[in-house]
Image 1 (cartoon, rainbow, N blue to C red):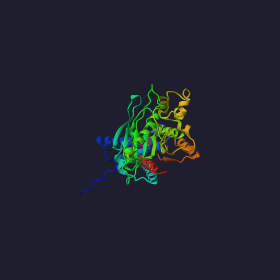
Image 2: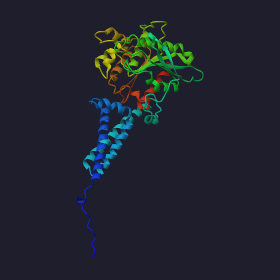
Image 3: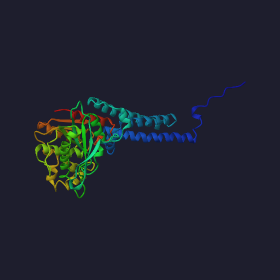
Image 4: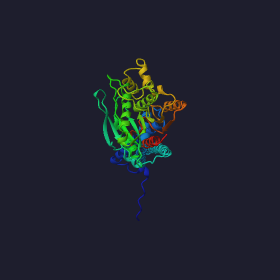
Length: 404
């Protein structure tokens, strides 16, 4: 009489082979790396006070929240595989951590998406996932030399907007970021092309950069004044409404633009050679330094070095230079309409400082708009397709497109 074989208890099952054991450990290790990275990024984005993670988290998490979510999902899937393959405790922890990171990253993206919609932004998720570069693949319509101070050719990238029903278009002269001593106008290609495609001409300019043996506190502002005058001189050629030319910039470029615009309005700066142009129609500062003295004192991300290169020394040595180039010095009644945009995670141009500066302008009766972008660090528009970059462009367009 035959008998059926008895099932082998699970406790007596053959242990997995060496290849299987190695594979599940590899899966767990990959999941561990993804869990650590995504957890550090999302924790740093939500809690910027965390050392190191609070620096990188807002940058990566704020600009790539959906990419971080996808990485976390991959980690969760690998953790689940490790769990099912026998690494129960390890796999359970990995799955839990990556699942929480996924939710946290999607939370960032959701908050930024809501802010974008509130700003009237037509969000493009194609750009979110396929346009990482700051230029957005753009190019100017033409590049011209607008000045040659001391024999140094200074160029302007011109982004032309189509005239609407034969009328002329508003324009903005934009100064690039870089701590007064680095980068150039090419950083503005994405913004320049997008604004032009939406009806605002852009003149993105280079200016004299500071070096250890050449401070430019009295040179770079002159360059912006000259660029403004050059734009006015070529307004008819480019179809620009000369009564609606604004001046703006990013970071150090925003500091230069605001200080120069206000000094023109106050009559405290003039062109060294030739006629001084009329003040700009309005002023824009994206994450600007509002007080160069504070840049030196706080020394965040190289701001002290930037301030010393720009002015030629310390505030103790050149207090008058620091005062002259700081926008806070020029706050008074009658200044131009002003837009200030800052990220709520910015360590350099602190949101509180920007809000206080805006409040000081408003107290003097200056029409001032302050916009704070969620989960955004300094230079939040570096990634052309990010949600905060798309939102900031829409805010800038709406501001420049106003007639008053």
